[in-house]
Length: 284
Length: 281
Image (cartoon, rainbow over all chains, first blue to last red; front, side, top):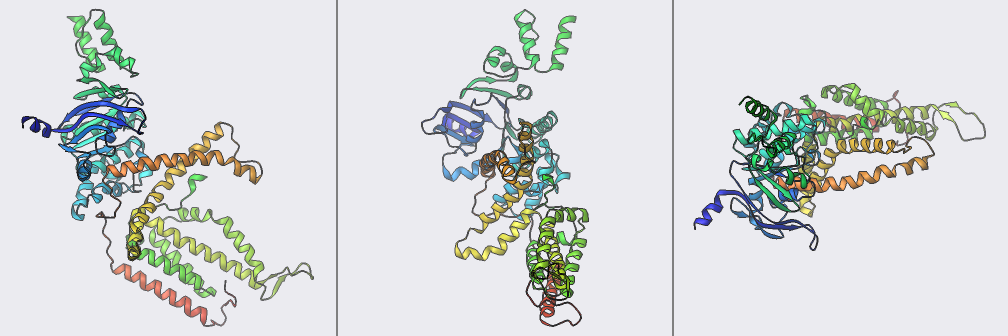
């Protein structure tokens, strides 16, 4: 009984999930288990082909696990009757903004999700406006989607998911195809949604610097989760991260090298924090 | 050059034409085009041309944009008009170079060439204006509703409409992609501009192959994105914009019907001094 209650509390839970793209092909995921709590900001790190994108598509029953189970709010994604409810609860934003925008006009695209959910006409308008405002694209509502910049397109895609009022958003490398400015736009939007609107975020990326402000970081390699902890805990494992092909931020590398040589600065995640800690160390 | 293509593009606006009910707009366009093809003399043709120009003016879309659309068909327009000169040999002979040949240019030939050119221009104006002033989603929504009686015959009207929405949405994306692939192939030394027609056609293969392969990849990803947004494919959805017929819709319908009647009447009744074709063009 007690066990069941804790299960209910997890928004998203993977239980020994194995996934093969082809029946007797290689396993993209090999018995992965983890859970995400309400309100958490979790970053999944991994290089190309590590299986991290498969996690995104498993989380809202687009893919179904070959073995094991995925639960969304306690609902098993394998049950067909849960399908729509799962997709309504967990929204997924994909990598290429061009390939996930359905309509030619911004507000019509944002309305696509709630339209599918048969939201009443009177509420539709409010939902669309609200979603566009919360990603800062309200002034662009009548613009053509193909004329927007990459970062703007991706924000429209996020608004399209937000308009469905999900409890959790999974973003599958949303910044991979963007320039630094677009990347910043998307990151700031996602952080704000997590902090101000209490939306659970599962952010999949291969940029380590995007993981620095997360509540929790998971590192995926070869279909398995090899690290799971706070950014500070994960960033300490410089050698392991480099071994699995991730670009460790310079700050983390420098801190690790200093620690090795007897100068421990503590948990450092950003350049500013490093400078501050270093000066303090020098003065002290 | 390739980026100049404006087919199926939409220019957002708030003019009367933009605000017309899209269903009515489709009906009006069909009616106007029907009238245009019923025109048999210059009187009714000029009336239809005037109507088309009034539509353009009402839509407040710049003439520059409209002309850009016309530029695309200029070659077809001139070619058709040129051929038309020789199809009609009534009226006074203007030029008959070799007595024994049947080749001659007559007044009626020239008139019918002008006639056909004006008709094509009006046709393009009317049909492009429909897509220029109606957002693709609304347009396909309207088609879905107009075709909904076909559901009786088990035709999947909703799927057809969704296919059209996506096709229209991806036109600019694919045009951009062609541009990128062309540059990439040129950078690898591909020659797209010189050589015989056959050689140039062959040079297009390395552009079309990646375009098709990429389109399949896009389709696959789009399908995931649509599923993630709870798309069911059965047409059970609500709509952001409601369609409601208003006074202006019926006013425009009345004008279109009057034009149709005028086209029919003037093509039957001889207008006296005004030029009337014996043959159907």
